[in-house]
Amino acid sequence: MVQTCDFLVIGSGLAGLAYALKVADHGKVVVLSKTQVGNTNTAWAQGGIAAVMSAEDSFEEHINDTLVAGAGLCRPDVVRAVVESAPERIKDLFAWGVRFDLEDRRTGAKIDLTREGGHSKRRILHVQDHTGQDIHKAVLERARNHPNIEIREDQFAADLILNRDLQSYAMDPPRCLGAYVFDRAKGEPVEYFARLTLLATGGAGKVYLYTSNWSGATGDGIAMAARAGARVANLEFMQFHPTCLYHPSARNFLITEALRGEGAQLVTADGEAFTKKHHPMGSLAPRDIVARSIDAEMKKSGAPCVYLDITHKPAAFLRERFPVIHRRCLEFGIDMTKEPIPVVPAAHYLCGGVLTDLAGRTDIAGLLAAGETACTGLHGANRLASNSLLECLAFSQNAAQFTIANKDRFPLPDPRELPRRPREAANEDEMIVISHMWEEIRRLMWNYVGIVRSNRRLLRAKTRLDNILVEIKDYYGGYGMHPDIIELRNIALVASLTVECALRRKESRGIHYTIDHPEKDGAIGQDTVLIPANA
Ligand code: FAD
Ligand code: SIN
Image 1 (spheres, rainbow, N blue to C red):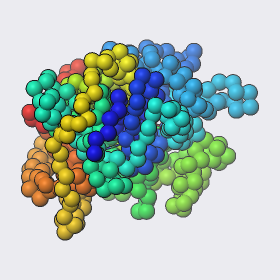
Image 2 (tube, rainbow, N blue to C red):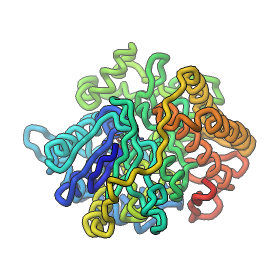
Image 3 (cartoon, protein in one colour):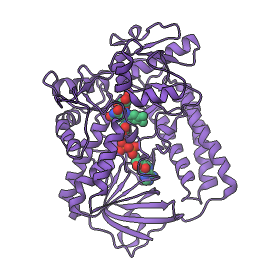
Image 4 (cartoon, rainbow, N blue to C red):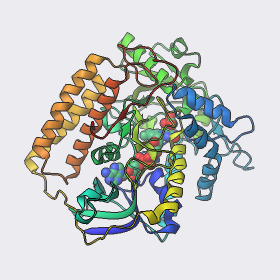
């Protein structure tokens, strides 16, 4: 079955929905979600969104903090453009109905700004500790009420449709014409044709065994773009969030950095505050440094976790400011008002992704990318906390402007032309093997491509991943349209591209730390760009 629209948006997180809202007055938009529309990293964001909103702060300081965290790998023009556009993007959020916390709710006086690691000023707008949920709800409601936007759930994009797949377009210059999608509800394939396609599929935390991400964060956009021949870059920079809840029954639960912004200290089981030994900013140092210092303390002591202590703050303040975390910890028998919270680092945010320019254009005409799936140059070797929701908005805006100005250069393909596509159903007998391979990839990425790396461990990961990729091709080459197989294929590819990037970087920079090259190779770094032939 073929479906058509002007603008196809793959992903219903902040990047996808903000773009949809911006282009919707200029054509029909279809937004795809691989499961239910609320299943996104966006809805899980806790801390907030960074923007210069106070007279005590300045663009120059936000730019400088972003560049310092990015460790010589940010694109300064991109950083400036994003930081300077932030107040306008915050206005968009207000217009869409987001109500950020105010310093005084009664008088409605000033926006309450909190602080996070690597920020020299308080500049994080938030809604208690459920900022992402409120942003997503507001943007989704707007999108649902727009007559030109259709949001479709259970639509799993498997690959991009390129003009080489259609007989009468095969000789044209390379262009994306939409996506091959698996309709999970109906159990059948659908082809979506569009003038322009936005990849907004989010991150890839699930490539690692322990992650703060939702279960569908399997790097699908990066894998699709790489298979289609677009360059991907800087995948070695998977950011590990220092503080995820450590409890046998708690999976993927983040303890926001804003807790440290409000004075929480990282301590050992003996109550020793250790982060100042590693950086003068202590618990509020950039994330890579805090995550590595936790890793070092855990290795030194053999302890399974460290602790985050905010018991010096009044209980009423903690209950009011961090209601979600307070409630969740209580479910696990931890009262954060009285005792420190056990925490460990976990894979959190992918700084690399599909290479784009400032307009969100990828290497393939007609294919744009925004949000966590993109590598825009904003984050460099280490993202500054709360800059990613901002990036979603900034690049959706830029991509929308490009779309509106250029849509007529991208005519809709003839819907009567059927592209070749994989149609086979999966063999039930093989499904158990998929979960074994899935587990193996995630465990080896955690063990060999984690917070502290070495050539030997990376090469070991590469050997195993090379075999796994061959096995996947041999066993499942024919079962192209089963969601579990598509995800397995994607995490295997993203894992292997990550290792390739990590092996190429012969230095330690930002998040990428290897004992074989412990120093930075010069103040300004080079992106690790994988060209399509290598991918
Ligand atoms: P997402 O919001 O993850 O949305 C991805 C969408 O793509 C989903 O709708 C999914 O269904 C869809 N999709 C994926 N693959 C396919 C496919 N194959 N076919 C169809 N659809 C597909 N950042 C901040 O700036 N501030 C914070 O406070 C903050 N806190 C965070 C807390 C947590 C726990 C996590 C996990 C992240 C946090 N981040 C934060 C990061 C930030 O939330 C994300 O980077 C950002 O929300 C990503 O938005 P996105 O639109 O790119 O992707
Ligand atoms: C957090 O709230 O600690 C997450 C912030 C972020 O990832 O930007």
